[in-house]
Length: 114
Length: 114
Image (cartoon, each protein chain N blue to C red):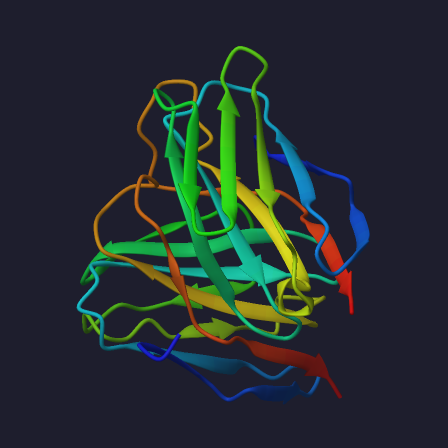
């Protein structure tokens, strides 16, 4: 989706290191989401934010942190506390609050452990 | 947490044939969405169907919803090689009605052979 930019496309993490995944959107959407996808699996929600300076934990928030200082940006930090970080991370946005709106996705960041 | 379950897990057909994928869920919903994911890419929204709707069309896609059976189906007619992708259903996953989160199934991997 051209309106959502995730970077980098590939990321490698050393043991004990924190890494930050970037998600930027120019769709003027209020809500932003971070999902984790493991091979052959569906998406699991890590964190979401419905408005600037506010965010909520999803189903698997442990070992992750986020911030929402600007409407356009919702970075995700994978901390050293996340013992199994290898996965495909997807950022999404939606126009309004709630799960009654379509979500728009970026093209993901693939994180691996060195 | 509630999760839609797609069936079959994998489907292989010839170009020109129809493809049908099913999704079952556990509790009442306000809406159900279908998404497509090409390999290594983000998800793309296909159709949103609300709980008071029974059928919805978009081009070669037809989605049905049976709330009494807690199930939905996605039909792709006259399939093309470009339809090769994984298809996911997602529900708003709530008993009360009104949720901020989507819950995704594990997906059906569709292969359309030329």
